[in-house]
Amino acid sequence: MSDDHRHIGDDTAPRVVVKTRPKVKKPRMYKVLMLNDDYTPMEFVVHVLEHIFGKSREDAARIMLHVHHRGVGLCGVYTYEVAETKANQVVDLACRCQHPLQCTIEKE
Image 1 (cartoon, rainbow, N blue to C red):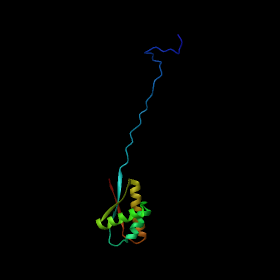
Image 2: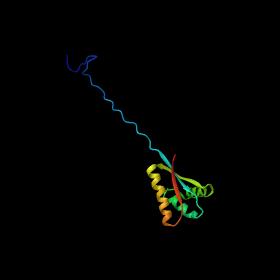
Image 3: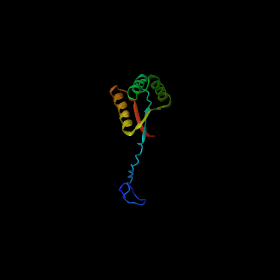
Image 4: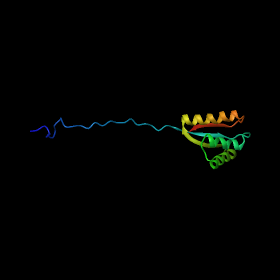
């Protein structure tokens, strides 16, 4: 009998190796929240929302008005590192322009 013929139960038959992949958790997401103050000009807030958060002029104006009327508004939702960076960029830019604008982050 040739080697090409294998019998059922023959331990020399080829085997399939299955590799398991470790499950990767999705990273926690964080909300960047802008806080209202009575001193920062509305146009500056719109500028921040456009340039730091990539919002359109219309969305930036809508968010700015929400912050103005409600006291706090959502700028975006990001991974921790991105949220922290964006919040710090807002505070740093506001400080350089002598505005008291503040942003915070919180878990979603």
